[in-house]
Image (cartoon, rainbow, N blue to C red; front, side, top):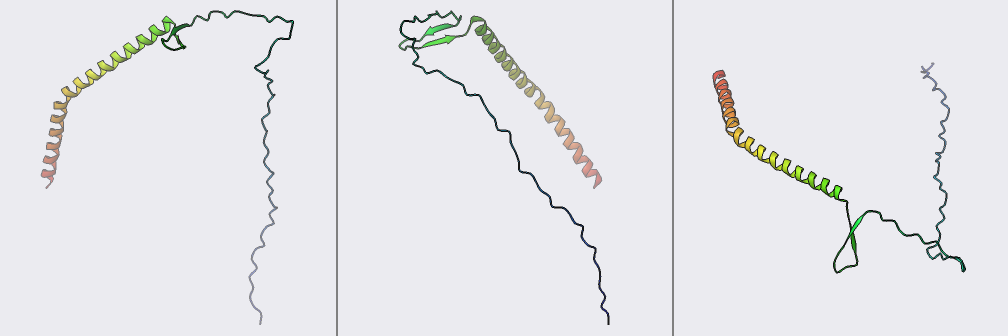
Length: 128
């Protein structure tokens, strides 16, 4: 007696996958040489002294302190002040207009919503 056998297909040979190791480009920099803060000119050499130029920035001396506060130029102050005034005026005007629109439209909207709800009730009652 012979037994029946079933030959299943032979699986294909798949080559083994290899994944290369990741590589990265490391950042590099050129070191910056900073001289020490206690540099002095050698004996017998006279250092060049240069006077500081006026940068045009006004400074206000704060009383009872040794602090001077830099103040922007007049043009910048005028522009900032004008912008602030315009934005506040626009905000107040828009707020007043919105409040007026709400008080004017509230009765109209209530009346319209009342009419719509009444018509809906009439349609529902008519269907029954």
